[in-house]
Length: 73
Image (cartoon, rainbow, N blue to C red; front, top):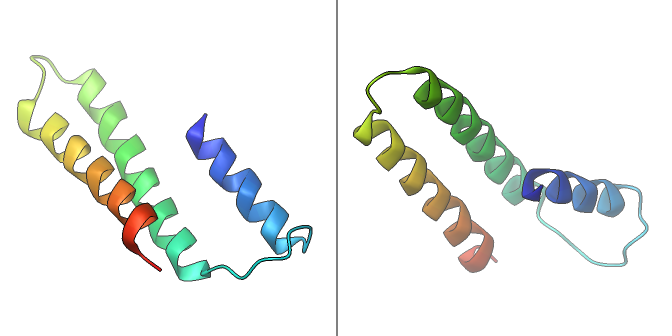
């Protein structure tokens, strides 16, 4: 759901419906990280036994994505 809301927000900004400056690079980096997280999650669901390192990478990338959203001006 959050992935779709980010795309919706980007679409509204691109359409000019919101009067605010934004950083396209920030959106691109966050989108790429979200795609990598999604791919790793699908890979992790198929592997048996559960891969702790893989899920750790997913958690770390999620934390990086949150930090980008909060601290990148």
